[in-house]
Image (cartoon, rainbow, N blue to C red):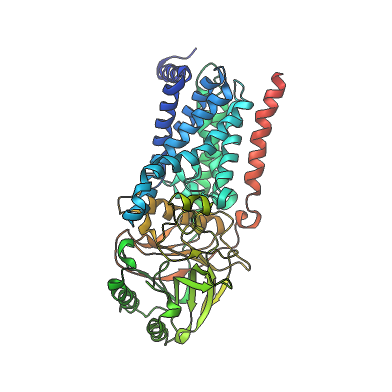
Length: 529
């Protein structure tokens, strides 16, 4: 028999669990929305990861109550939708800022976006919980069933309609770089699966099916991951490649001002002036952000002359830029591209972004949505066309590099081309994500750091309005320039590591863990029969 504080803790847990299980209808959905919204505080910049774990425990207990209802699958789907809606509404509210760049044309869409965007993403959570409800049984097995369904839905969210794997559960460990080292083994999807399983298993600490062994075992597993990550960070000194001096330029141009005709000359001159700032040794490689030139370079001979002068001494310029071409039909097509200019402005490489942003650079189901007055947010004539895949390009006087434009860095195992590059360059324009108080730029920045750890490659990040940074292959930020700051970052290039386990086998470990969760959940159900 338990006495003292432990008994008090168990009693409090039991009362809380009983409260969540008793909820019905809109009360249950309201609690699920609140739990989902609080879970968003685990993501950058807040890093309150215990809220994410507790929210999964609450979700499991609410699903216990849904399982006791007359239509458990439907009730579970509604509960899952409410949880997802709360998380996505609170975690991705900053998407609405993009509709204020051109408010006359797009601001009217904000009320619809505020509901439809998180509501649409929440359909994946609804699917996860409905799937889990089909195999739900009282006892320890239900946490494995929930985890399997949840992570299958997260995988689908990251791949359907080009995918949107933003704020996966694994990113909730923003507060611990040591914990994030585990993605070098099984990727952010693997860390996400363990996070969901750990959080949901906390429900097992409550009656009537108290089973502390599973959450205790998972706590020990996470402690081991943290210790391993700490050792990895401590035993991996920062190493730089000799002879390479990088300069990242952050012009901090507001999106609303970027393409104003009367300001284009000033914006261009600022890029040149920042690139020429005297600050120690001259840079060997200069990196400008996504779509840095406020015009089409191919149609701006003076700008090309300026680039020739900037690179006359052998300096390499790498920049994002909008590129235009005309199809045989005569239809203009735009590309969100990345240029590498060598000595005397010689164009050495051109890369076209292949993961386009839905509603930002293209509109899915264009005929239907155009008829409703919905167009892409980027106010450029013509439509954006996608490239084919990640690529690796040779760069003068440096290892080969792999460019990533904006949110291409979101996609695990889809950021490295063949052959494997020595470093990644992520150019982006996060001015779309709102002011410095918005959480969007910080979430995007964390995602880039996780990609560096997964692949074992440094990421050089040039962001128009921040956060620009030098990220080493363990996700350590060696230097950075914050949101809404104008300036440059000068740094040597960190050396990359040998391919990580994840870089070699992609998501194989994640799929094995997902299969194991499904087998444990279903086998326990079969035994009870």
